[in-house]
Amino acid sequence: MSSSAKSSKNAAPESNHWFGRLLIKTAVFFAGLGVCGALLGALALALAWPNLPDLSAMIDYRPRVPLRIYTADKVLIGEFGEERRNVLRFNEIPDVMKSAILAAEDDRFYQHSGIDWQGVARAAVANITSMAKSQGASTITMQVARNFYLSSEKTYTRKFYELLLTFKIEATLSKNEILDLYMNQIYLGHRSYGFAAASRTYFGKPLGDITIAEAAMLAGIPKAPSRFNPIANMPRAKSRQMYVLGRMRDLGYITPEEYQQASQQPIVLKSAPGTPAGGYAIHAEYAAELARQLLFTVYQDNIYSRGFNIYTTIDSKEQQQAYEAVRNGILDYTRRAPYPGPEETINLPAGVEQNAEQFDEILEKVQDKYRDSDDLMVGVVLSAAPDKVVVARSPEQIVEITDKSALKVIARGLAKNAKSDVRISRGAVVYIRKNGDYWELLNKPSVQAAFVALQPQDGAIRAMVGGSTSKNSSTG
Image 1 (spheres, rainbow, N blue to C red):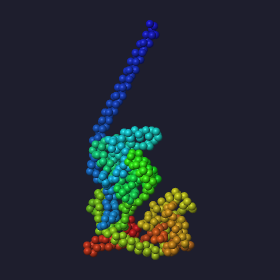
Image 2 (image 1 turned 45 degrees about the vertical axis):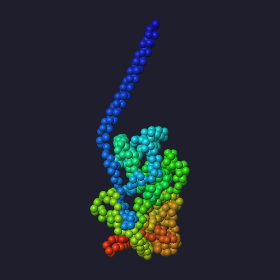
Image 3 (image 1 turned 135 degrees about the vertical axis):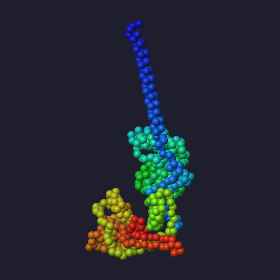
């Protein structure tokens, strides 16, 4: 046998031996790395778990419910507190709302143990494919943990605590209890917390009366409350609603026929009385403020979150009659008084009303500075002549004032020789009001008036009206 053949035979075992040792070393390295990772994870868990908050705020749930003031006949006249909330028990929330929430946020909520690993994988694939964070994997339990105890900052430490807290919540509460907390606690825009409050804010109805289409729109809001609520941005809210409806259909929560009907249902926005956008059924601001002040002397700031309901001696019908009498008297006096001129006159470029977006920005700035006063609404004059004044409330709402009696009230502002501070001209900021069948232009009342009706037997206040321009006035 030649020497070259012998060396070749010796080289093969040595090469195999070297490769085997490399595999063993690699395996040992990764095993050690895994053990180190496990030890570090166990250490982090041992240090973090005792520092997790207890779940008393969830187990003994006491949401921040505002102070509400009512008349003697149970009409809401005032609400004080930062969070508008109507708490419902789990069995009081309609099934269509629960289905819409699960379809929008976490359809495997009842299957996973707090973290949906299938959802994590699906989101990872979608994000890698799109090269952007197009999907998230937060479950309802993770959102509850974040809303109750954690900030929204995007750090690894906060995320680690969120995961641990998620497991703790799942180990302590039932699925129905977690979903109940979510539906009552989540922020849904316009100072509304929970779906019951949001239903009143956006649709003016109790949550039990909503349709499939309305439930889907509400369920789409949590993704981005400031951008997906229908008051702020109806096109985005509608787009999100259609996504939720599609998910409800695909998951079998609704039939294809129900999907078609819901997708075609017009959404009518109507804020209920007592909501931030809905005002109150009657004007009794001074009476409500007096009740608030009296309660504040006893409970201080606690009154704004403990859900007190206060019933006054005010009668709603008598209060509304008193308000209308005082209001009409003030407006009659204002019509008889010399017209003092517009609030101010802004520079309104020629033809700007043809550019809806630019014109809307101008009107928005004006209406931020000068607020509507009940039925006295702020507008900007587009043109003014002795026989007609054209006023814009919005790019779509243009009002023409042509009634002779209405024009007579502001005649000194339409005269050719009118002084500059009195003259009504293009760009003038004015108040307009619908008076029966015609529109009129009035200045905001400056005169003050008051009316109090007492029950002689016991001194109970049946009606209380006052002022015309103050922040809490009942006539302004």
